[in-house]
Length: 329
Image (cartoon, rainbow, N blue to C red; front, top):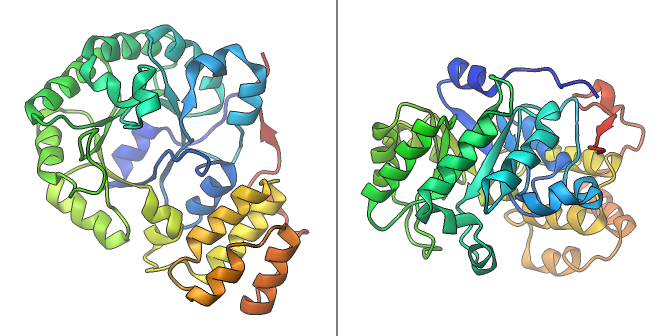
């Protein structure tokens, strides 16, 4: 299959004051959701985290974990890897179809760290350097290789880590402004500012961005080149367009996109639960959140919101190419 065309991520950084980014979210940031947020001013999307070892070894894993199409760009695939070989091998498989890859050095979950993934890697700067170098040597010049990290208690260690990655050739760095042990504590934007001032590559800030006003404030406070949202954009996919909560037009778009792209029921339903969290009464949530079929959801949406699924919507002419891209090896 031919390489996908479109603006490179380097060009995106050059042309925009700062980027609006959708985070890698397990189970959630898949093709239909990425397509939705692109309609509402999101500049760059990540896939969910994919385990590189299984992705390289298993055709079944490739079929289930990675799907894209010609409208799904610019796109970055995020991999979890505990060695440079797996990261580079997985990257070679997706490189013809995306604009970049990202090494997950930020996941704080115990299982990930126990396997040598995620935040475990922020204590392994040499492994990060080797992973970046090996992977960069196998891809085209306009293909980005980035890392997403959490910070250390001692920010000087994080600065040293980022400078090591920069010297290895990393394209940009995303910084979640919490340590691996922190969950709901305030984001350390001062640390992100320090990191941004210490490197010459683009830096994206992540953590507690729930509105477009939050994004602009974080940009002003830190000087970063982009802002990444996770929970905020999950609850309101139109946040980067300035909506304070998910508008009905966005819910309508989700219904049409998700079903026309074959989104499984649980994913379809869970996204709607998140999107409707703010504008739905407790009584209505008790009804909607326990629905067990797509037909039941569609009946509920049409009866209560006037939203009707359009199965004849032409995705190919509505900003979404109908043809899927899957990797065969």
